[in-house]
Amino acid sequence: MTKYLLDYSCGQKGDFLSNFLNGKDLRIENNFNKSFPDDINLKLLSTLIEKNKNSILEETLSKDFLVCSGHNLDIIGSDILNQYDCKIIKLITEEKYINTSFIECVIKHNTALTNIASTIRYGDGSAKENFKLYKKVKYHIDATLIIENIEITDANRRARILQMIKNREIRFSHKDNIYKTVWKVLNYSDVYVNSNFDLLYEICPKFDEKYFIECLEKTWLPDKIDLFGEMVDLRELGYRDY
Image 1 (cartoon, rainbow, N blue to C red):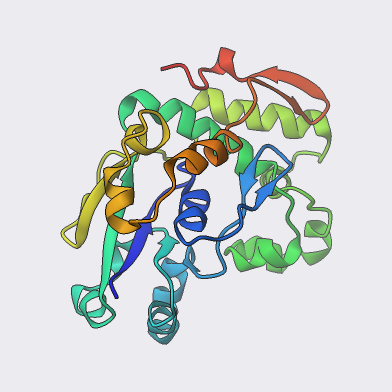
Image 2 (image 1 turned 180 degrees about the vertical axis):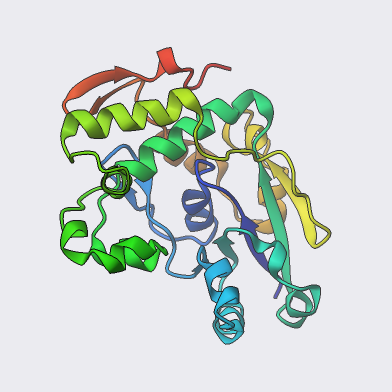
């Protein structure tokens, strides 16, 4: 049976989409509607390859799944894809929707609960060197504050997140990098805005678009959110302004 690898970036609802297509229970975190990743995923693929842990990649691809989500899947060779009958789908956010996707990325990632173990797991070398300091980490944004020697307070958390959004500090482009092993491109606008589900039906003939739309609505951020004790109007920042 053909299996599909969904190559997506932060803010593209990749966890939600893969969970839905795999028939998993929709797992949404109350904190700003963040979806939990599926148990089978390739989100740390680059780290695995760098550490020569190709066996973990092959072990993952050999498992029983319909869709496996991940990041930077261009480093998987065509020989491995053919061996495990896998096809890569690249999720692309068009220019018109990048601001919305970017805001979701910054808000959902930085307000998610974390801990010292997960901070180290995701490759923050400084956390290993200063374990006691990083024990103060509660949210992802806290690690950034520590690195920048900023006191961890709700006001500083909020200010730093808004600065990220307004200054577009992180690299954020989903339009390019259509590498040669991509089987098909899935546009953000089709699946999340215009309800063009042709590719999703091709992947999953039993796709339930009515239920998908119902679930999708739960993944959007509200227009106004309580961001660490103060209401912030995301519409004023450009959220869903298309």
